[in-house]
Image (cartoon, rainbow over all chains, first blue to last red; front, side, top):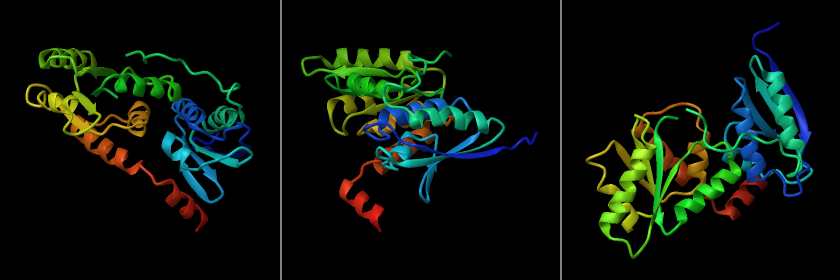
Length: 103
Length: 136
């Protein structure tokens, strides 16, 4: 198995408000669990998948097709988990542990 | 990130910033907030800030974010510069807090303060300009 894996897949925004702050925040929280480098693309525009504000700058409304690209050992799992966030409605967003992080 | 973060602002602005931050980043680290009220004495304000600095300190210093340069929350925060390992950045906004809550790499306090000041400024936009950029 190659150490550096590159995975890229497209997802359609189903959230009726588009990719707004809460889903973008969830995307970044979940992205932080993976070692892979992560980008999000709309057309030719690619931004870091680790920055809430950069993701918001894509201004991805409902129905927009976004691509997630991940490079690294856990790229496949990262794209899988993050695709769920992009394709989710607000109610379907996967939960992340709330409250302060443990020291 | 092992630099602590404290917001010092008028009324409950800081609490509400943290409220909004936690909506967007539910797993944000714990940041402190100090509410400065007009009927408080300077000593009361200083004590509240000192308590928040102590709670936030993890050994790498504390980044204090105030709502506005020249306001009392800022002025009193600045008085801690000499006696504590703190940097004060004025004009806090939500993008700055989201960035601080999601940073992966650790940065020394002075470097982090300079970065977050620039980041906050960069994330103020005129929507009309963004739209015309997108069309070009």
